[in-house]
Length: 137
Image 1 (cartoon, helix red, strand yellow):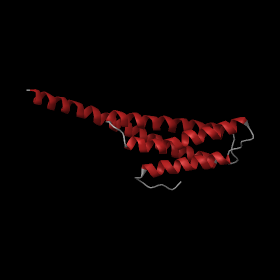
Image 2 (cartoon, one colour):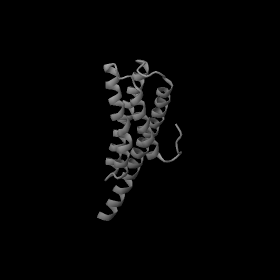
Image 3 (cartoon, one colour):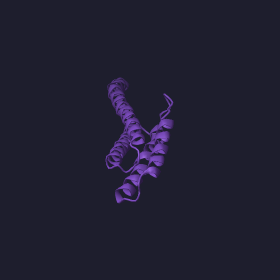
């Protein structure tokens, strides 16, 4: 999967499109194939949609919450991809393995983003309290 280095939104959209394409190639003659195919579309397209919501968050707490929703959906997608691959619901495992790798990279990005946002929020709070105390004097 070709990706732009810093455009995370495009990367998430491309990932969602990949999940749609993978879903189309899954063997749907089996109940598990139909189920996992539908799950892949839902959980795999969700991060790209939620990323826009995170960018418009109303507060740092809201931003972190929305990033955690994206992370949850990515983890769910990775689980669905692994099950699809292990159950041999697709004729070739190569696209699934590549998708699992991309999903794992996205998970790592969001884990770090959440940690950074939480750390920045903690570091700023004491400064704000000190400023408030000075104003109240």
